Amino acid sequence: MKNVFEEVVTFALNKNVDFVLIPGDLFDKKVINAETLDQAINLFKMLNEKEIPVYVTEGNHDMSTYVSKYSWLEFMSQKGYIKLLKPFDNTLAMWNVETKTGSFIETENYVVYGLGYPGVNAKNFLEKITPEIKESNKPIITMLHAGIDKFVTEG
Image (cartoon, rainbow, N blue to C red; front, side, top):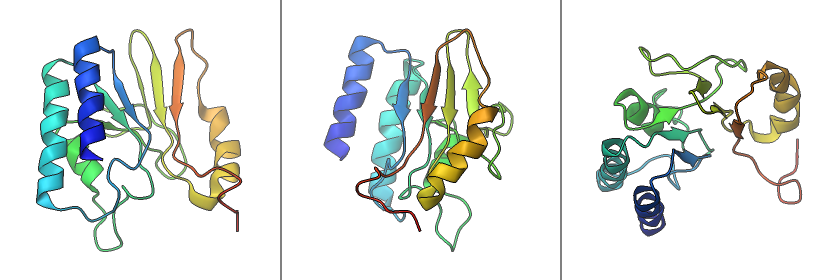
């Protein structure tokens, strides 16, 4: 996974993209080692140096464990390496620069929403949250981490 992410970062840097999107599961497990975190931070630093924002929403492997309420993505967002976009209490809120939290971010050129990982409640969650997505003259990008119907059954 590290090699593929390095390729993505290299592409982004060489092509001077406007932003990078990560729609969940940056890591393949909830508990990561220090080396993995260090590698991710170093790659994000490269993007930050070129002023390429990284918008991330949580996948099921990225969420905090029951032991901690603070995930690795939240840590990296608070340190300014990424912008973690996720709903709070099933509602959407604009990105707050001071708290470094929010569900969506609006720039001069686009709007990005991060809806996270709703699990087996994806259908109900989307029905509730979709009306909260504001209309815009700018392109709207919505990230959601979810399974595909044929592979995930609802409870």
